Length: 197
Image (tube, rainbow, N blue to C red; front, side, top):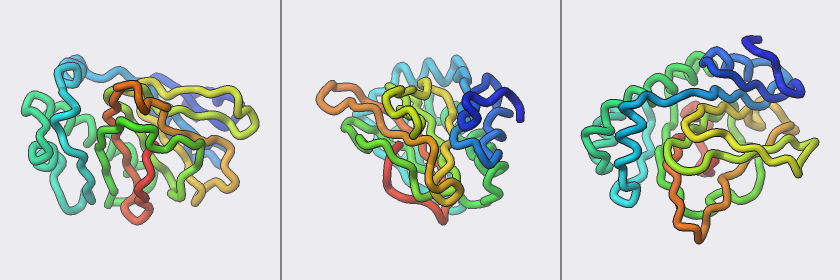
């Protein structure tokens, strides 16, 4: 274990090493509370999310930078965002051993997954680049709702590794508020499902 676990099922820490804690049998969620690079933060601050398309790709078949450009992402954002996604893909690969990943980067403007749930995957990485982060709670404490910080990388253990789940998550309720989220989802390719986090 890289850092102490909170109630033995959630690991939180300031370095990428905390993500390894999700491999512990009792750990359902690992959150890397990281800071995005200043260049990426500045480019994200200038992004008009209404001008870009959602992307979904199998990372074995397509280059992320070309896909971002084709989806309308500005050149100033493509480089730093591609680098960040590549680093998260590398972390996900180290944990899953999967050489192929299903990657989605989508603009969320509704209550996409409004019910707390656990996904039918092994390990799902979620990172909210713009807007409020994914909400979660322990099954044993459903009234205590926590939120993954914007920019943090969170890996949720899915039902294929932990069933019944001990931690559930959902998209934060933003429907009708005018808020937008830019959400990255990474799954092993064989485990991809269309639900948002």
